[in-house]
Length: 358
Image (spheres, rainbow, N blue to C red):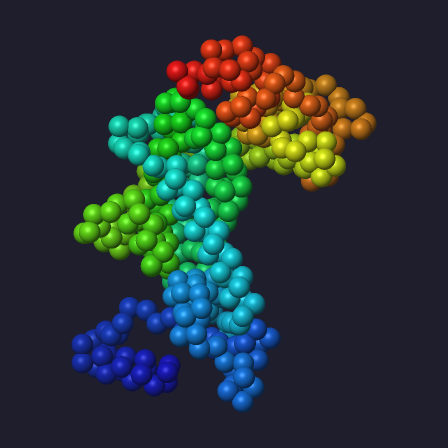
C-alpha cells in the first residue's frame, strides 16, 4: 500500500493541490497467531473478527488492538484474547465501583480541592499526570500507551490502593467532609476515565455513561475530555505519598503472613508497630492516618530500633514491622476493633459509627 494507494494519491495531490491528501499515515505489522506463525486456512490458525465479536463483544477486539504494539507484527489467539478479556473485566470493575460510590451524588456534595485530604489531592495529582499522557499518546496514535497508562492507573493506583483505603469512608462515614471529598474525586475520575477510554471501549463507556446520565440525548461520545487543572500537580505531595506507599508495602506483606498462618482473618484485627529509621519518612507517616492507609484498627509508629524478629522487606530498607493484635471489641458496623466499642448509645458500635447512626 505504501507503493500503491498512499504513494499514488500523494503524488496526484501534490501535483494538483500542492499538499498531501492526508495528515498522517499509520502503518501496522502483520497479524500472526499466538505462536508467531502466519495465519493460514490450511493450518487452521485463523482468527475471524466476527467470531471474536460473537464470543467476547466488539470492545474486547478493540481493546486487543489498543494494547498491541502495531509497529511490529502482532499476535492473536484464544489465550491472548482470554488475557484481554481479563483486563477488560478489571477496567469494568473500576467503573462499577465508581458508579456505586456516586449513587445520589450531586453538585451540592462537591468539595474544593484545596479543602480535600492529602490522599484525595494525591489522586488529583495522578489524574493531572495521566491527562497529559493520554492526550499526547492519542495525538501520536500511541494507543498502546493510552491503554497501558490508564490500565495501570485503574488497577494499581485506584483498585489496589485508593479504593481499598476509601471503602471504609464511603461505606461507614456519615455526611463527613472526607466522604464528600472522596465522592468528589470519584466524580472527577468518572468523567476522565469514561472520556479517556471512550475511543477504545466505545460500547462499554457508553453503557457506563448512560447508567449515570439516563437522558436519551446523553452520550459519552458527544462529550469532550474535560480539561484537567495544572494546579492539581503537586510533586512534593507525590514524593511524600511515594514514601507512604513504600512503608505500606511492608505492613501489607507482614499482615499477609499472619493471614496465611491464620493468626488473623482480616487486616482490621491487627494493630502493628512500624519501626522507621528514616526521619523524613517517619514524619510523613505521622502526618497521615497511616492506620487507615494500611486498613488496620490501629498502628504504632516509632524511630526505636526494631527487634531482630521484626518483619522486613529487602526492597524497602529501614522499615520493620512488629505484629500485634488490635485490642478492644469489634464494631458491628465498620468491623474495626477498638477500645470504645459498646460505650455509645447504639449497641456494638464505635464512636464514629454511633455518630453516623444518629
